[in-house]
Image (cartoon, rainbow, N blue to C red; front, side, top):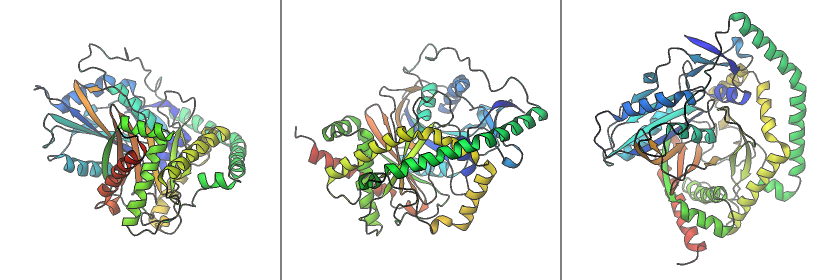
Length: 474
């Protein structure tokens, strides 16, 4: 049983949910490695469940499921599940093996879509790792309809403590008002849907006008050759051996780099950590695609998610995105890094100028049922085998905590993020800083099973080469 929340999914959240198809699963994954060298009577699974249970009321919609409206003509409701059980969402992983096998297991875990008839998250606890004594792991997947990348870090903050055994929750008493004031009857539901449809009809001309202005702004902004080269248009990315429709399987790997050295290199080049991350991935992508037989020479395109200004603490997605050139036609390392830095600056400038966070409201014009039907039709027809990709890779960066965190008394050692893939874009690199490390979580599909670790090695090699070339000798 459940109560309907007097709250709808936003158009963007609903769109993320509706875009799911058999090969495109829009959930965010994470592998958390924890160290616990104490001999405890209770298991890691029991302690993780206890921590979640004590904090889950501070995590909006984590006890709510999505309830579709008839015919899918408007966004669905969040509905609080009255018989919610933590045991349905946090289970012991069926895993025994070493860390390399755990990475394969994690890829299999995020390959499986989340069930839509229950709250949109799932956790598995690995109580031991053969080659890492005293450690255990938590693998989680959360649908993008529930959180974005920045909010994912804030969710972690709710779950974790700043010391091993605090006397109380650092956030104080949890007093979140739970979803709804009572059950909505069928008349209330019908009235709400009709009101929503009428409101969309009234707002449609304003939203269409806003979209037209944003498109005109983009055309005017990219009239100069310099701006055009930095901010490419949609579906103009070159085809590569990685282009084409997704498979359902996910393959993951990761690497970590010393955060202090990475920041030092960024300062020396007068660019941001995000700029340098994109540049390092750009050079590694050159080598990876060359290994796959790609001729190269054309600028590849990355989608760059951006957190909207003035975002509140709601779990609703509050992101926009722009396409940014990775400057692969530029061979000189420093010149390419400067080019990417200029491109990200122009993307942020255009984001502010065009108020793209408002443009995301246009997602509410597309009925969820139509979005879902189009996504599934494109999957069945393998449409993305034939058309140019919207972009070649998704690269995102999230700043994490600089001090150690603890979960149920155990120290969080590493955070390894796994971002979602898009059709014809089977490569996602999500970069998260935590304490002294900068972690690159890399996700692809079945076509990269035998080569993704090589791509990760290329990223490490590029960073070392740039450090040797650019940083002053000690």
